Amino acid sequence: MNNFWQTYGRTTGVAVVLGFMLLLDDVFTGPLAFISGTSQPVLEQYVAAAFCFVATLLISRYIKVDILNGMIPRRSGNPVPQLVTDLTGVLVLFIGICFIFAVVFKKDITALVATGGASVMIIGLALRDMLLAAFTGVLLNVEKPLKPGDVVKINDKWVGKVDKITWRATYLMTFSEETLVIPNLMLANAVIVNLATPDSRSRRNLEVVIDYDTSVESAERILYAAALGAVGVTYIGSPSVVARRMERDGVVYLIAYTISSYTDGMKSDHAVIKNVLQCMRDAGITVSFPKSEVIHTPRRARIADRSLDILRLVQQCKVFRPLPAALCERISNVLVERYYVAGATIVKAGERRDSLFIIGEGMVKRTLTDRDGAALVNERFIATEAFGRRALFSAQPQAAAVTAETAVLVYEFERRALAAMLEQDPALADVLANSLAHLAWRESKDNIAGIEPEPAVIERLTNLHRGRIHAAYMLEPQLAVAS
Image (cartoon, rainbow, N blue to C red; front, side, top):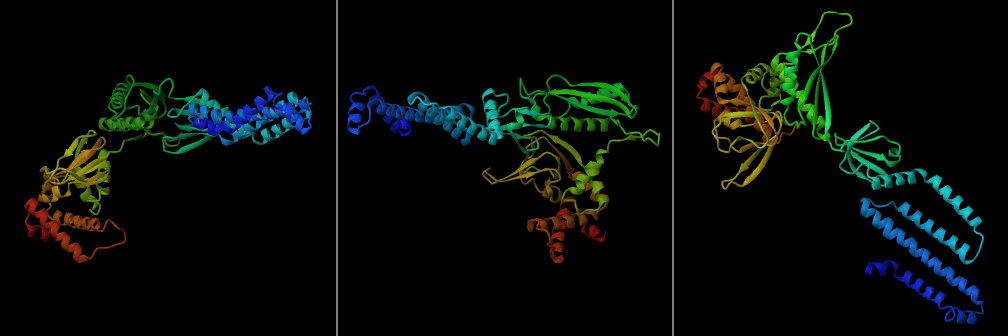
């Protein structure tokens, strides 16, 4: 009620007074006409015109406040542009003025309407694009062919999730986390495919060209197992594998599968391709290599050996980065591959597991706790990072609990593997100690680039780590130093 009187109170009061003056003309307009010397019919016309004008103001204010800035935004969830509100108010006032001149004063309003129509046409031409965009925005918000949260494809050009729809533009969030602002004017004639209706399922196709040396039965079996074993993919029904066609380079196989949500398309394709390559690598199946137009000798492209991936991982790990390539290769050959699902515990705090772990894929979290079990520090490790240095090189218990935040692949460098390498080459202790010394020094300086350690500092740290390795693996110091 308070809002009503604040918005319409004074104008409503004036309209009520004027209405009473019209209804009781002998009581009000008669005496006023006598006092002012104006004829009573003329005075009644002016009072009627004033009443109609005040009524027009009330109608204009009601449309602007309660409809354009009230009911429509509540239903659509978007505010009406101020330009639309102002133009509507002007239009209502123009209609009210035309009514007053035509009905109350009995005037010919042809010229007025013509002038107003010409003005409206000029304004309409000037604001054509803006008005059409606003009108399209109204239709999008009322008819709702798409709504925030839907995944849509527009003109086979843009694909993304609808973030919001305003009266001027529609905002799409692409799968690469980019925001596209598409003017509603473009959507007026656009072909919009709503991938979220009737549901968000998506049919995916993946083609693989395999050399003719592999039988169709073997390829079909391997590809089907690879699609089924893709981690993190939610299928609707079972995937299918068919030999699609024969080409000069090999047989084209089609892996077809349906996922439950279109938004998981890129992630699902990645998981399937990754597992297909792994299964083909394990089975020794080769993909086809395009034949040359000049050299007609058939060629095949083998999928890279997994050991190369592990070697690159070891070389990128900061613990082993300074080591020679030959030593990194020796380490990569003794690593043990471990898989953990999200939430699984990899090591427990205080556990006697003398191993170092290198993250190959995914992310893990290490939690340092106090004596009462309260978490003090949470650290996260991603691919190429490692934890468990003290456990492997100093035979100390694992300092903190480590859990898998996602599905992870880790490579474990076990104590027995390092012990065998040190037994074969005791001088390896010096190389590892020097690498650990440089790593410890860089970490103490927060890995600031451009700062070089003093030789005396590195020598002291190297002696410290060498002593720990000798004690943990019971090496003869003089043998290690001599070599």
